[in-house]
Length: 212
Image (spheres, rainbow, N blue to C red):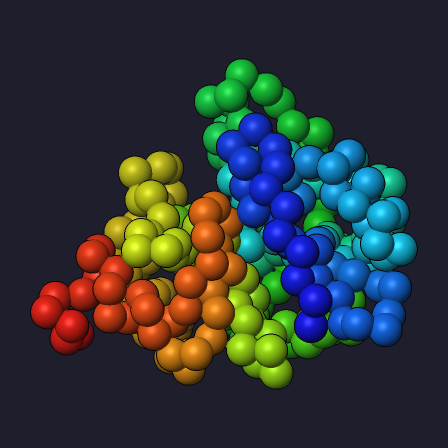
């Protein structure tokens, strides 16, 4: 699996272009800026068939409308966040003083289902807490997980937003993300990548003396 990490958009979100070598189809995860992503796909000779959203805060969907319109890609999001695609207040875009164009998703994701995109197979883990419909997208063959703002390198997602829940976030991390192999690479919505094993041992928000 090939992974291109492209920080872009108003809060420098990690947008990912993901594809299997040998195919021109790709998936885009959390499009922060359509123009930047389209330029990179053209450079790499790729076409976007799926847009996968880890959650619906504005920085992760800032380029969604333009990218979906330009590519005709299938927009996929968990059902619990779907309504936020048409509500700039709920997506927190109004905090930036903007109103994002509403987008109607093509597919509502559910916990445990698998989705084929870009020649890859993603398994959906519903990881609520930062938002109600947050998901982690796991590519088991590559031992890779795209975790949005659920967990970061030695950090966790904020839970002081409307519809966030700190206890739910901790449960999602410990019960879902930490069920993955320690060698699994975590690709977060902001900052550098990390691994499940590193966060299990060193994340200061979660560990206590290396024990759980």
